[in-house]
Length: 399
Image (spheres, rainbow, N blue to C red):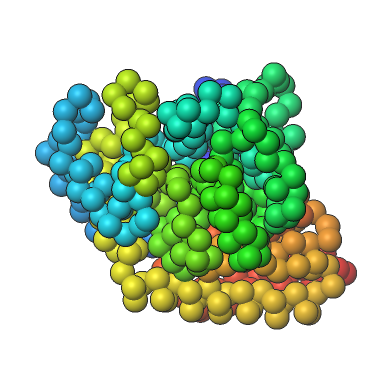
């Protein structure tokens, strides 16, 4: 463990301590697997927090990055950028949206959506409509605006006063939303599946009713698909699984196939409110990130690929539910596509640590919820290995 210890020592000495890191230093990845500094192999069911949907170092993404890196890495958005324009064309072709604003991360995409919602309201003649409704257990990012939109008080400590103009509403409760709408409300911001909140899935009717409520009140409906986008739920975008089209959508994580890139997309009518000078991002839509994203999109958007994600995700969910019946310590299994969770009646870190020791990486959120975000290319035999490992760990918890 000398190599890992040295890396940890360097990190502790020189890197800001903003993360509760596990005692693991990952140095290489391929497909569904990563290797630590000592050469130990791990099945990665965290995937960089839903970034590496195609697994690590997908050959098409690597090929695109290498080619673009030798051609043009960065120029300013003062100029037209060919990879950016081609990516925007495909993203709009494959979605409800008419225009794309590119940035670098999910929190930036949500900041852009917040600004767009307020600007659009002003352009519509509503100078006092600035409030955005968000939901309990939501997570929209760490910058001050997106943090203020996040309805989890544990993230707010030490950063008050937060940005005003957000009202928190109970998730999956349309009556609560209707009561919360006021003359100040301009938009509703929601994750179609809450990720950091514990993989919470709303009723289909809730999102449909939310769509109608927004339409009736002249409000924008914004979907935060930073984690759910690009195949994670078994469709290119999660809104397709619910049959509800938003007015605005925010994207990041898996968009770049491992490269940092974010996007905020909206209908042509709504995006008219963004004109030169209203918003910008120096690195947004740079040639290198867009080339990587194009390569990833070309793979993920294929119908056979998405069909396999749904089928494999159904198999994974079925195995987890079978496991739940065998272990009283399991409270609930929930999920959609390849975004799955197992909520326990006790803290989940012992299971995470057991799995890591056995060569499988999983995630734990909300203290008691094990979250599974495997590469979308995972095979059933690899799922079986994970299920067996989790079962053995749950048995130790119950003994």
